[in-house]
Structure formats: structure tokens, C-alpha cells
Amino acid sequence: MSKRVLAASIKHETHAFNRLPTTLAHFKAQQFALGDEIRAKYKGVRLEMGGFLDAAEKYGWEIHHPVCTFATPGGSVTDEAFEFFLGHLEEGLRRAGRLDGVALALHGSMVTQSHDDAEGEILKRTRAIIGKEIPVAVTLDPHSNVTRTMALHANIITAFRTSPHVDQYETALRAAAILDRAMKGEVKPRVYLARRAALNAFDSARTYTGRGPMIEALRRATEIEKTENGVLCVSVHSGFSRSDFAEVGPSVAVTGDGDHPRYQALAEALMEFGWQNRHIQTEKVMSVDEAIAIARQVTVGEKPLIVGDYGDAPGGGAYGDSTSILKALMDAGIKNAALAAMYDPDSTRKARAAGVGSTVKLTLGGKHDPDFGGGPIEVEAKVTALSDGNFVYKGPYGTGTRGSFGESAAVDIKGIQVILSTLNKGIYDLEQFRIFGIEPTDKSVLVVKCMQGHHAAFDPIGSRSIDVDSGGLTTIDIKRFPYRKVPRPTWPLDDI
Ligand SMILES: [Zn+2]
Image 1 (cartoon, protein in one colour):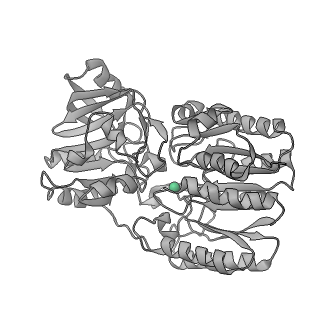
Image 2 (tube, rainbow, N blue to C red):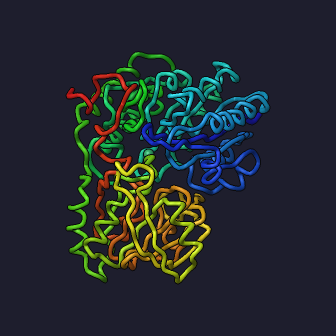
Image 3 (tube, rainbow, N blue to C red):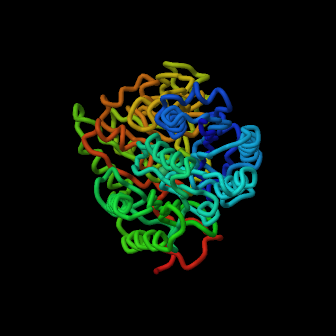
């Protein structure tokens, strides 16, 4: 008899200090599918749900999939949105009848208006319906705060092993393989969690630099899986430092077969390695001035300089409207540049109303919180393109994923092409320029609002790739945030 599995994905990365709540509309604008439409939207897409669907075929599961969603990172998820998705998950669990297993793709740093540990709440309420015996597999982002509640209710935890996260699909297959063995009664997985009092460790999960604490931790994790009897999986999490609650921080989760104190010791040893190397960051995040000095050296005809706006990354929960890099480029007279994307609905509408070929005066960006990343700048902009803002990733990151800037425009400001959007969206793929007729490989300087995810698609077309702190809401200077709930002392807020 084929095994019956329920698979669902409810994901959000929540920035505790972003003032804008994340609503149901934000989820609907990015990734949102219910029931039968999930297969049509996600089969063949290199995300976790694409992996679960393929695993179902491989293992002959009967698969139920009530909900698949995620929104651009931002402020707290509203209770309305959370209960909407939880309601679909709970109804799906009840309607599925007898289940043999559950596979959940979560992020690991979602916070809602009512729940600091939203993933813990999802798992608790899943257990309340299915009971204690049915195995639950969970995939996570490594930028996650894994809580004791999550570890208690999940049987299997495994996070992505790349950052940029180009292995979301493979991570689902890894979770599915262990889940299948558990459903057949071959193993009895349990999660053992080790944590430390820090906001961040393991080099912020970077793997694209090819060296550093995350690379070494993953090497050791693989070694443990190969050599330690009973260890089914080792998962490494850097933490998500822009959360503010009791269980923020890095962790290691060992999924072991059955109960044994050795699993906890293995998790503690690898976590201790992360703690000892918490200071190491393999990418220097430079100042805007340093970046401009490098941009001045670029000559037309060279491959583009890739400038990651690390400090104002929508993918990390920032507002996406920091002006400090754009202003510095303009002041330096740098031309043949392009920037994606400025989240400014008001300016976008003005540009769209004026139409292609018109010149408009805009008070651009910096409107959400001028203290983070600079206030609005007055510009004259020539409208070069309008778009519905919809794109499909064609590069290595989440290949096949659909996303949107909403109704949007491209404008030229003194030789810098700037994409203006009505939805806040991080930059991961060359298509996000190309839908506006901007060919990224022809540019001398490309500014992309992203922390790490862009490195997969953009570094191969660049002459050099630098990360810059524009001072936005994802600034590296986390001491600027007014943490209230994180237990003290914790590193690096306290000198421990
Ligand atoms: Zn991440």
C-alpha cells in the first residue's frame, strides 16, 4: 500500500525592526498556491515543493498538498495571514485522513503578531492533529533560529547547504529520503539541538566564498553523517540576527535514529566549532565610499562591477528604498550603471502615468525610515520602460520560480537606469533587469539590493563582486537595533 504524505510550505523571514506588517496580500503577490494548483505551479520548479512532488513519484507516495506560500521578507506576519495559511494546513491534515508522514518546508525565522516562534506554532498545531507517532520532516533556511519547540515536534530537520540557496530542491529530496525510511519503519528519527548565546555564527551561512566556518562545518557535518552510526542528518544554522525573541541564535540539529546521548554530544561539538569561529566573516562588507572608489576605476566595455546592496536587502527584510548608493553614484558622475530595485510605489506611479519617453521630477526612495539608508532624493528621471513586473528566474537560484515587482517602471537618472517597483523584491536573477529591456552584461556597474542570493547569478557575469553597507535595515551594524527580548548576555551585543 502506498504511503500517504502531506506536504506543505509556509515560509517567511521576519525582520523584527521593519515597521511594515507582512499581510496576506504580500504572500499573494509572490508565492501563493492552494490545493490542486500547487502541482501545476511547482512541478519542475527548483524549490522544496518541486522536490516533494518528485519524491512522491520516486517513492510511490500518495501526496496531499494543501498550501504553498512565501512572501518577500518584511515586518511581522499579520495574524490574519498566518491563520489563513495555518487554517489550510490544519484542514488539509484533517481531510487527508490516515497519514503516514508529513513534510513541511519552513523558513525558520518567521514571527507573527501573536507568535515569536511561528514555526514552533505550526509544528505544535500539526502534532495536535496527527498525534505523536507520525514522522514529520522539516526543511529550513540556514538563516534560521531553530527553537526547542521545533526540535521537539519535528522528527527530521535539514537546512539548505548552500548560500546563495541553490539547493532548495535537493534539500527537500534529502528530507524526503529520511521520511520514507521512517514511514517504512526502518528508522525512528529524533532531533537533537545545540545552541549558543549569539545572534549569528557560521559566517552568516556563506558558502559562495568557498572557505570559512560554514564550509568547514558542512564538511564536518557530512563526515559525521558518513561515519557516525545512527546519524541520519546534520543541519547547520547560522541564526537570523534580525529577530528579537528568546531563542534567536545559531544552532546545529542532529537527526539521529532513536535515542542516544551521543547525538546531543555531536551537535554540541559542531556548535562549539561555530561558537569558537563566530568572529570570522569571509566577505568584507564595505562602506559606500569604498565602493564608489572601486566603481570609479571601472571602464566601459569591461564586464560589470557587481555591487550588492547588503545593507538594504529586501531578501533580509529591508525596505528596499535606501538611496545612499544611488546618490553616491550620481555625485561621482558614474554612468552606464543600473540599479534594481527601488521600492517606491508613489514614484513608480508617477513614472507610469508620465509614460515612456517622458521626463518626470521624483522625490525618490528613503521614505520608510530615512535613518536607515538615507532619505528621499530629488531627481529628474526619464522613463525608459514600463512592465507588469512579473518574471521567472532562469538562473541557478530557484530556477523556474515566479516573482513580481508589481506594476513597475525603469527610469534613467543621469546615465543610471533605476527600476522602480510597487512591490518590494530582492534581486536574484538577470531576468529581473531584462524584463525592462536592460541587458545587465552591457552595464559597467550593476547595483542589486541583495545580501547573498545574487552572487549565484551575477558573479559569473561580473569583473568583480563587492558587498556594500548602505546603512539600510539589513546593515551589518546590528548594534543599531533596539533588541528587547533577546536574553543577555549574547554575542556580539555583549563582549562574550
Ligand atoms: Zn537564507
